[in-house]
Length: 332
Ligand code: KG4
Ligand code: ZN
Image (tube, rainbow, N blue to C red; front, side, top):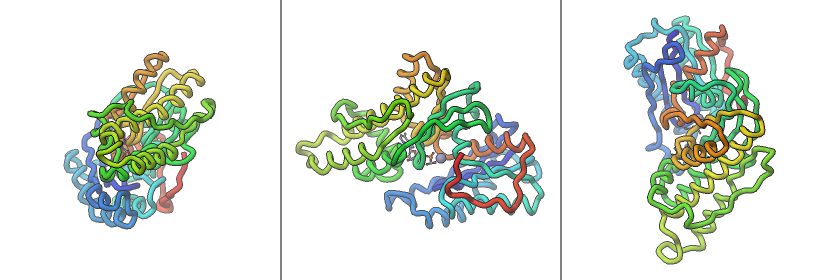
C-alpha cells in the first residue's frame, strides 16, 4: 500500500511517500526557520502563507523522489490537528482537493498520534511502551498499547519542554528554533556550572513543569553581567540542558516502573536532544528498561510519521469525507 503523508501543522511543510508502512520512498521537509527566526517564534500568518507557497512543490517533489505519480497512491494521510489552524488548513485543503479530483481515499491524522508511532519507521518495538512526547507545543506521557490505544499518564502543567528551549535560546540571543542551537552550544559547556532549580512535583502524577527554570535562567542572565560574574554561554546552555533532561527523564522512568512496562520510546522535536537521549539511556539501563529513539529527522515534524499513522487507519478501512475540518485543539 502506497501512502502519501502531508504535514503542515506548524512551521514545517513536509511530505513523504511510504510503502506498506515500512519503506520510506521519499521524505521531504521544507523548514521555515529563516522566515520566523527574526521574530523569535512562529508567526502564524506568515506560516500559513509559506505553506501555501511550498506545499505543492513539496508534494510533487516527494512523489518524484519516490518515482510515483498520484495514480500509484492507494491513500493519503494529512495532519488535521492539533496545531495552528491556518497552517493545518493548507495541508488539509490540498489533500482534500487531490482526493476530490482523483478519488484517492484520505484520512486525517492526529499529529500527536503520529509522533507516538514515529519510532516504527526505523525500529521494531513491541507494545506496550511508555512514550515521552516532548515538542515545541507538548510535553506528554502516554502508555501506548497498540495503534489507537493510548492511555494518557501525565503532561506539563505549564510550558512545553521545547517552548522552554526556544524561550531560553531567545534570551541568550541564539535565534529560533532554539533547541538545536542550545544542544550544540552545550557540547563544550559544563552541566554542573550552574545549578538551575528542578521543579519538584509529585512523582505519582508523572507531571512536568518548565516555566520555573525558564524564569530562573532569565533571572540569572539579568543579575549576572556578561563577561563579569556570568559563566560562559556554553556552561549556561549545558546547565540548562542538564536540568531539562533530568526533569523529563525522572517521570518517564517512574511511569515505566510503576506500570510494569519495560520499554520507553522518545518522540517529538526535543527527543533529538543529545543529553536527553544519553540520560534517558543511562537511567533506563540502571532501572532495567529498554529505550528507543527515532533518528533526529523523525523526532521533529515530518511527513513520514503522518503517512505511517495514516497507513494504519487506511488499512483498517477508515476513510474521511470532505466534511473533516482542521482542529487546532485536537486531543488524543
Ligand atoms: O516536534 P517538533 O518539530 O514540532 C512540534 O510539534 O512542536 O518540535 C519542535 C521543538 C522546538 O521547540 C525545538 O527547539 C525543539 O523541538 N528541538 C530541540 C532539539 N531539536 C529540536 N530541543 C532540544 N534539543 C534539540 N536537539
Ligand atoms: Zn510535532
